[in-house]
Image (cartoon, rainbow, N blue to C red; front, side, top):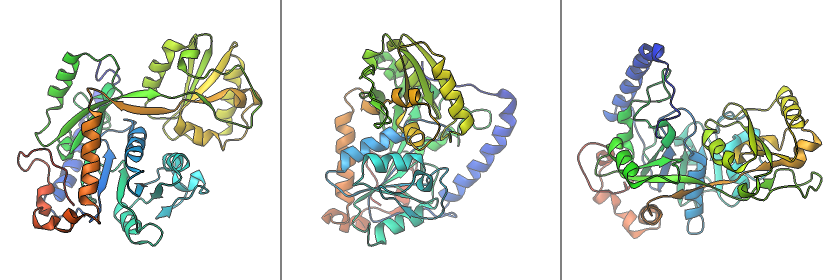
Length: 395
């Protein structure tokens, strides 16, 4: 059920109250225009959350890339969490992962023709993407994990909410995992409840919709995770015919699920019914695998009965690929499980049409975009000022 992964530390609620005061004051400064939010004459779509930990940002960003890349020049801008560089970095397919972070690296390797850049200061990053000779042909910018980054005023603000960690039942950090009070969801144009079980009943959708308590100007969607074919991480490892092609072929296998992501439980629950049995090695989000970790992985896998495989995520794969010390057995049976999202309740068509329509309407080459300042004031971007129909903001 929704919220079933939430664990609260009620002893820390006083600290959460103090933290909340600070966040509310910061948001008030933006709402009063004391701290400035900057809008841009180019479509900007932000994908983020108001919780600490994974809500499925990367597969949703990849969905947007797939949706837009054949019609527009798409750029993805991230802060590049845990990278070993500073300032603005424009990625190439040869850029090392440590210079841009694992998620931007994953996306650049997967979509080499898409522009990928990192900058902790998103306003500066957008200015580079729109002004530098290499990238000034950009048609639309996707901001990764930027819901709290209010110095940028996106044209479309997408808020992701994990079905299993519903913001309705969570608390502010450190007692819970909310980054800001629940009212923050009012800034979203689109709210997506992610990682939904595939067998949700109509009544459950209605309950979730009522709980979210959105304004008329906000759209609500539900997505679930789908998995692709299992693929070997190391193509140069010894050929091994005893490798399953998909989850449905795991019934005779002992599986070691190896993850370094924020919320691996949904993948565990999705893989477990297909495997003979499953063992987990779960590390923290963006974990850098050290030699003691590699030794533990090698030993754990060596002690498992055959037939056996290791399954990991795409984000973990990009870090494991450059890790030394994995045993030949591990390398030959380490598989990556690709993940993608799909919309429920036939929401895909409406979502796609709205996103594509927004980008077309607000592109720098659009006739409509030339006159946008005639009918759209800057103040109308504030969520909650007044009831309005669904309309993506023309920044």
